[in-house]
Amino acid sequence: MRLLTLVVIFASFYMAFCEKARFDNYRVYSMIVENEEQLRILQELENHRDGIEFLESPNSIGDFTELIVPPHKLADINDLFEKYEIKSLAKSNNLQKLIDEEQPQFSSRATFSWEKYYDLDDIYKWLDEMLEEYPNELTNYNYGTSYENRPLRAIKFSRKSGNPLIFIESTIHAREWVTAATATYILNELVTSDDPEIKELADNYDWVIIPVFNVDGYSYTHSKNRLWRKSRSSNGLYPFCVGTDLNRNFDFHHAEAGASRNPCYETYAGTKPFSEKETQALAEFVSNFDNIKMYISFHSYGQMLLFPYGHTKSHAKNFHDMNAIGLKAKEGIKKRYGTNYIVGSIAEAIYLASGSSIDWAYAQRNVSLTYSFEFRDARNGNYGFILPANFIIPNAVEVLDGLKAMTKQAKSLKYF
Ligand SMILES: [Zn+2]
Image 1 (spheres, rainbow, N blue to C red):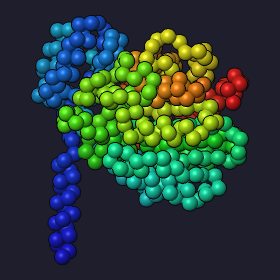
Image 2 (image 1 turned 60 degrees about the vertical axis):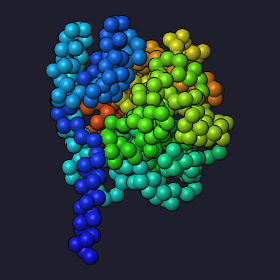
Image 3 (image 1 turned 90 degrees about the vertical axis):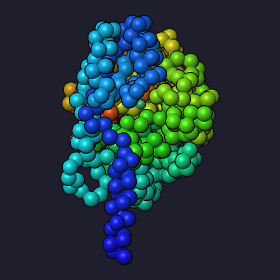
Image 4 (image 1 turned 45 degrees about the vertical axis):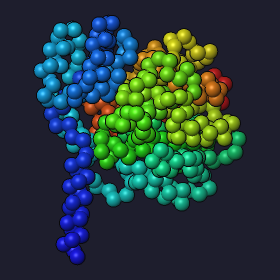
């Protein structure tokens, strides 16, 4: 019996191990699309692929694009870069090595900490422990279920009634692991910290935090493919192209720019606005709160603080205030470890992207201040999405510094 159990355990471990995507000797390249010809050639490459995967799709000139190349395509891709004068930055010679080294080799603590990345079950277990320990300040919301029937959960933290509400939606993109770790870190600090500046945030604001919004995608990054971005819904006629980019699925200028109608693309916007269970559930959940003064979406990477609009370079009504608040955050973030953030509208600072959650919250839910953080790594950094776990705490601490500075400036501009 015992031997059989061992065999079963070994077999399931072997299966799970074998089914997981590996990236041995894959290289990661990033580039800015400089002209029409480069855009055409990169888009053609994305259509034909042959083992090459785009982490960031090239949608227009000026776009930051990132692709991973298997060893047998390296010569071809370098020829292509040379021919079209594409100035690429080779970021890693062996993507699998980055993935293998992302988690600490030895974890010293048995309980939940911010020294390693956790999967969804562990995060939900930790939320339950927090709810049990702080029942007066924390409220649990199961606000829906995902395509694969996982619970969608949020936690509200409130110390007194009448506070303005800051809403944090994290991990809409599955592979951005540091976002879930940062969201849980911030919740923990708000609840437990004695630091006067954090207490100020905890006492005078309500917080609703969704630590992992794209629960199916996040689970998939842990079990099958570390680099998965989208949801896990099926796209009918395209059985090999699973998932929708949830951050292109919201109901504001849906699929107009910087989003794809092709289900095989990373930025696939879905068949229509709110075609996905997750975005529908979020929209309904958000409408339960009438005191949201700031809506923040956590992403990685690129070290940016972005605000509306994404569908156009035209400036939003309170562009100058959002920019001023963003610049204060930049200052606050930099003070701690010198980390440099770029501040600007989505369309101007990064790329055109329509149908995002922050554009929707701003334009359709009338939240006057909405932001997307793009956490560490830097664009030209070595790690990209695969940020080693020892950066979780420094990242979270500086983001919290940014939030302190943002709320202070927003208050002085009378948003709270
Ligand atoms: Zn993202």
